[in-house]
Amino acid sequence: MKGVITALMVAYDKDGNINEKGLREIIRYNLDVCKVDGLYVNGSTGENFMISTEEKKEIFRITKDEVKDQVPLIAQVGSVNLKEAIELAKYATDLGYDALSAVTPFYYKFNFNEIKHYYNSIINAVDSKMIIYSIPFLTGVNMSLDQFAELFENEKIIGVKFTAGDFYLLERMRKAFPEKLIYAGFDEMLLPATVLGIDGAIGSTFNVNGQRARQIFELAQQGKIDEAREVQHITNDLITDILNNGLYQTIKEILKVKGIDSGYCRQPMELLSEEKVAFAQAIAKKYL
Ligand code: MN9
Image (cartoon, rainbow, N blue to C red; front, side, top):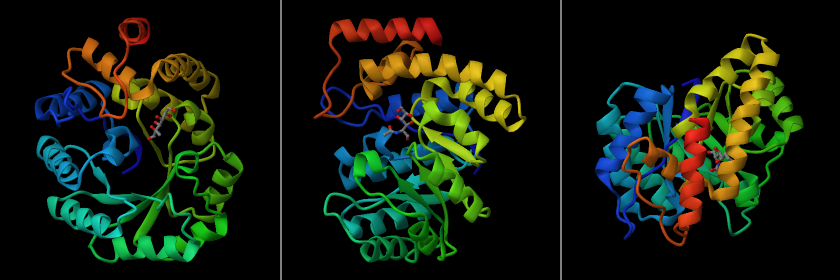
């Protein structure tokens, strides 16, 4: 489960319904063209926090059916509704997902004992492994090195998706937990994270830019830092344009340019204006 792993986009139609054909096309594009090493399903990029339990299950089911055993699959099951998280953990494990991940519980400012109880409750309910999903800029939940260490005492908690720019903490984690899997979560910081010894990366932009991500990751691992930096520069020109135009909407428009029925984002995310659609198309032509 190392390497370049896509945080999978989901195709929704204009009414917000899952478009199964479009989702399968996005999956195929990731495997056949971006050639990524795995998929992370129902993360932020899958618009997971705006959909129902049944829809989450449908996405897990369709993705496993399309991928079969071609690449490892990680199921993000985290929810402030712990019962839902456990139900989804059981569901994805029964489908044959290779590992689970769960976002740190957010909104209520849970204390660390509550966070620990949450992770242990989810993972001890199933025969699987857990990757902590830490994304402080969206959840407001910051955990310390000691707190990660306490969570990692449970051997079924095997790693972390580290979506943060705190490279001091990332370095401390790498040194303290050589056996755990550390994944970078910010695609625009893949090169420095790789230099610090991450095991892989999980990102949204890999849906369209997976090949460059692999180059950065592999060049940096080989110590070819100048070459890796050049690829990161182009990648970050692309990511900056995407972020300025609307992250998920723009990635979907780029996929449309590639002939994929990637649909729209789920409300309350807005539709792109005509001008922004045109800019997204220009981004696709310029970089991809
Ligand atoms: O999964 C993604 N995080 C979010 C990780 O979408 C919140 C990243 O891939 C970012 O989208 C990307 C752009 O900032 O690095």
